[in-house]
Image 1 (cartoon, rainbow, N blue to C red):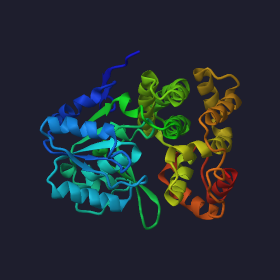
Image 2: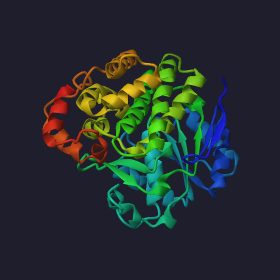
Image 3: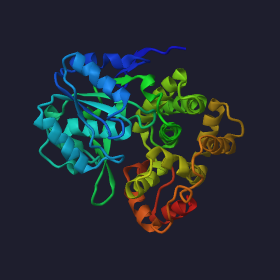
Length: 381
């Protein structure tokens, strides 16, 4: 089944195999004449990246790349990216890659025209109104994984290299003007990355669905996103060349990030400090802490999860859904707990203090306190 679609919600999305060929046209549609492609070090030499650069070069848009991006991008990467952008007189960004490349690319486009430090635009209250909106460069996003959904997000996660705290930097214009979702770019993903990014998409949908805030549109998107993951993630994992599965996982990733405007929760509140301190893969960390968080939240979400289980074709209500999560993790070879990830349990107090301050904590169905978060972390080992 060859899926080709053009969507305008939540932004212009070009979905389908081979659509990377439209990259130059997408840049030109936003007024770019000299874009900077921003990606991570691992992707920079790969054929899919070089092919994207060739599309730009052949269209007369140059062949500029910045790839000094860590797996958890920080303000040092950001400063270097802004310098590269300004020094060569670029007028837009192609954010290319997984979460790290997408997040840093979006943030470079945002910060290139600002005079205040990046931390002044953290997702707190109306801090985003401090920004000079006219200074934000246009963005084309090209995901090469199917998980974070950063391609349709209005924020970037940047790690403070001094405090090791992940900060969410927000502005409505972080949302890329055009997104190209070409499933052929994800075919070469290793199984571990397919699993981790896919579980990230599932976590986004699950937490958005479980969040107590009122947003029925996000609720529906999250529910269907979970269904797509259930049907297509195992297929993509076992056969990386399954284009139909890869396409639907790209859709699920975008849906998860669209849905979590409703809120996230303890899965991400725990995962963010673990990733910042231990540099673990974000999606895989989400998958590891998911069962303890489901147990922790059970009394607040049991009825809701029963409805989700029925929609997903899972028998047994909450228990059936929980068992499904365990079986999916086993099929994808997710580590059983944080100990199996190689993390020691000697910093629970520190991680818990970081978790309750994480912006995701406020969306959890059960209020996170220092004491119950310590117990929840202990349950993850």
